[in-house]
Length: 128
Image 1 (cartoon, helix red, strand yellow):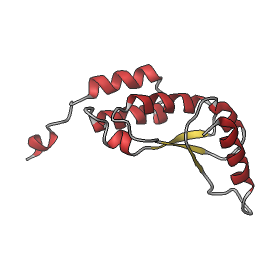
Image 2 (cartoon, rainbow, N blue to C red):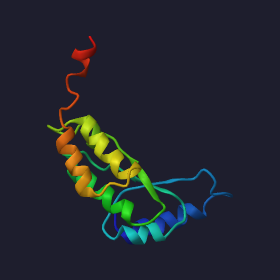
Image 3 (cartoon, one colour):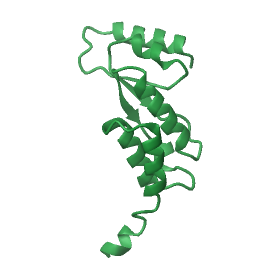
């Protein structure tokens, strides 16, 4: 999971097949991600990584990955957002979505994570 290995993998994947149309790469984040982003013109989606019970490390990696290059387009979120330990999954999803779709900084995403936590926790009670 080094930048050199991922760059080599991204370059090989881009060379496979007769067309790059509809081809996106799903790659994990690592240090020096700029090297990975420069290794291909294909769009990259960051993998969510192993669950750690806290969404903040994933948000840090997502923010850094999105800054690595214009072809890093988003993330495939999973357990880190759905099961953020003691955190709120809705606030975690909104923070990740803000980074990807609204161009938020990491600080804005972490602030939204804190202010949005528990905000709609009783929505089912309100509609019942």
